[in-house]
Amino acid sequence: MKVGAVIITMGNRPDELRALLDSVAKQDGDPVEAIVVGNGSPVPDVPEGVRTVELPENLGIPGGRNVGIEAFGPGGTDVDVLMFLDDDGLLARNDTAELCREAFEADPELGIISFRIADPDTGTTQRRHVPRLRAADPMRNSRVTTFLGGANAVRTKVLAEVGGLPDEFFYAHEETDLAWRALDAGWMIDYRADMVLHHPTTAPSRHAVYHRMVARNRVWLARRNLPAPLIPVYLGVWMSLTLARRPSRPALKAWFGGFVEGWSTACGPRRPMKWRTVWRLTRLGRPPVI
Image (cartoon, rainbow, N blue to C red; front, side):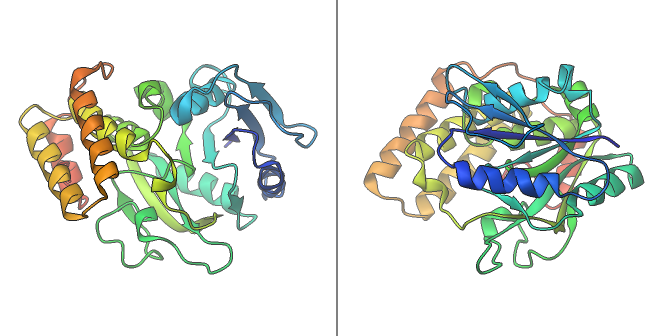
């Protein structure tokens, strides 16, 4: 299977980007072609053979990754598998691409693989980086219902069938939108602890737009994908969880502003998932109400 890699960058981490590209070049088996997308910024110097695309404006995470997908042909179909990697990450092992090939070849229903993210100094995997409710053991492989945006591999047949990431989201929850559409089309998603991306431990709230985008996109996610009776349940649960976490007053104000924006703005096409997909998500351990 032919494997490619898409990396988006703001051009502000040239050393980390170079180290990541070196780790991609060291992968066992056939070479992995990498494309670096400068998301509204010039691309720093990259090794020979790495293709680059420079966008005149920042299209956000999903928009930038979609440009990278199309650089591999319509829907990425010039390759069989695309890895999406954060530009400040590093593939910890040289066999990650080979493990991806083996996993996709062995399971024709497998559409997406979520890698394990580990801090390079401590080896710790943050709980939020294990894409399931039972996240206490990050070393356990399992079927899951979503995946990590900057550490994953996607079979390009999935993208050809259900489309790419939602450009409108810009940042936050775009992976879950794609995951739900893939699951609704019959594909499965695996979390693999042995496919590791080293990435410094960070807090998602470091982004200034975090609270607004998380709330707005949560509403959009529900409006686009859930059967109508589940929309108020899903959003009610998440509002309760947000309040229980006792965010600061400015954070809460931004969150409610985003929540209102999610209802008052266009969210893209609505394609509610089938009820059998709701049951599948429930059997996988995460019913689409949380």
